[in-house]
Image (tube, rainbow, N blue to C red; front, side, top):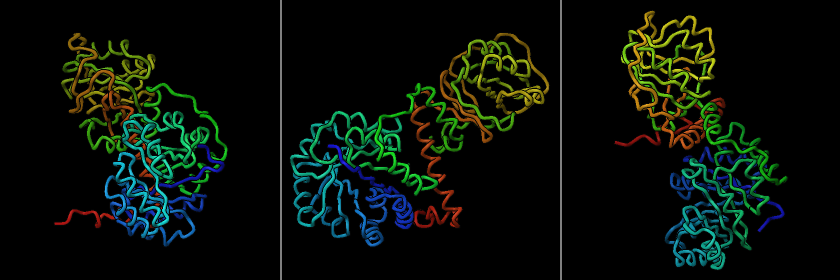
Length: 428
């Protein structure tokens, strides 16, 4: 069902009520009408979060994302008495739970939204929930699904209901506009507002996009191009956080300053300065690839100025050496990012020992041909090829979170105050 005036619902998926209220106030200034106490906030602060949102924003619609799976009447009663206008339950809940929740909602004058996240047959279940008496259906792609590229838009295009449809899961201004063209009545946005540097402006931009619904205008990128774009938009610390501190190469540091690289690995196994295979790998690599070398010695270099010039001619994106590099003064004048353990003056001999494009260990990390390598002034990380898109997306989420925290620090808070570290410390 297409709404004449789609509504923006801001999901406050935070852990602290004070921060949630501050962000909600900025979002309302930008035009937001529905304010959602997200599931993390409710789990962290309980019904007090809903009560405080109700007290603070008396003229706005308050949504409680309870994600109810059982005890439908009890949870709807709790949220309703705390001030929620709309309560969200899970579409996977048993019909008995749904019916119980509906009875409670009618008693307390609240409305019910069913979230179809994790539902195996969402179109069929949506129709069943509509017949049961649910007020809204939410087509929701979870965060972990978003990281692998899934989107709720395809499901939205297929579904046909008479009740209003909400859409959630990684929605930005472009997907918000597209969702409205396909009939979404409620656009639910979380991180792209709550983790924005300027919450008010981000809210305004999304609302303006909703008012001018249109098909997507962004050209669809090749998956590899999209991965490289995302990785270059973040940093190795963001990627390390996204990988839970995995994948960081030890001892390897930048030999050239302020040069960032991201590309797929062409691996080289060589020994104690034998520079034949590293140089031959230049011809085996494609433009944009990164040559990753295990040298077997930190005292004899398998790479220098002439190899760097050759790599530049081939469009190589960078070089990583578990070992030494030489001619660093000349290399620093060139444009190729080079990462190594240290610099030495001496090179070895081209004996031809070793292999190209085999599994190696570099900086203590396993590297397969085709894995993604990212290097900047912090160091180098390796990302398994199969998880590259997911990790790149997760790194972007880390970046968004940091931007919001930076903004709060600029307003005078300390990092400890923003994150409420004492509250979350493990109690003895």
